[in-house]
Amino acid sequence: MSGKVLKLREIGDPILKQVCKQVYISKKDKKVKEVMANLKTTFEYVGGFGIAAPQIGEDLRIIVIGVDKEKCRYEGAEDVPTTVMINPVISILDEEKTLDYEGCFSVPVIRGQVGRYKKIKVDFYDEKYKSQSWTVEGYTARLIQHECDHLDGIVFMQKVEDMAGVTTIDNLNNFIKNDKGK
Image (cartoon, rainbow, N blue to C red; front, side, top):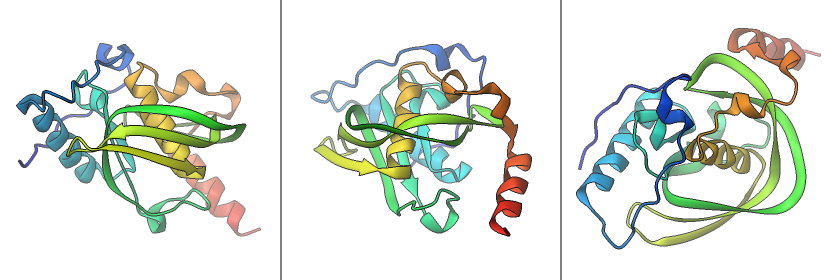
């Protein structure tokens, strides 16, 4: 099933404040397959590293992640194939957090520093409804935590630790470019 590119929901849209519904794995219904296809197609079109179902207007616990480390500014990022995660559940494996900038399609242009756990385990069902369990750390752990927040009605701005550090993507890119030259 090929999906459609759907409009991304931005901050202020009520669906971004909702706790999403569990997907009933035993059903394998047509609607869930359609949501997965649309989510993957929209993810590929917008070119980011992660997207959650509420960002395309769907009230289901589904995210898609995928990382090309060559295109990722986060130090130590690893390649992650495009992966659908249904009903992801995070377990914290290391209480230590790292603070780094995050952005989001639902909060365009703005970036802020968010503390995220360094190492987590995520249990989920893949798009073929097969149970999976991954242990991840670094950027992949950050990305999964960010996308799972969407499933609980949270956008990253609610977790920004110091509003004085909020910036625009252009300012952040200039800072990173200039900082690497030192």
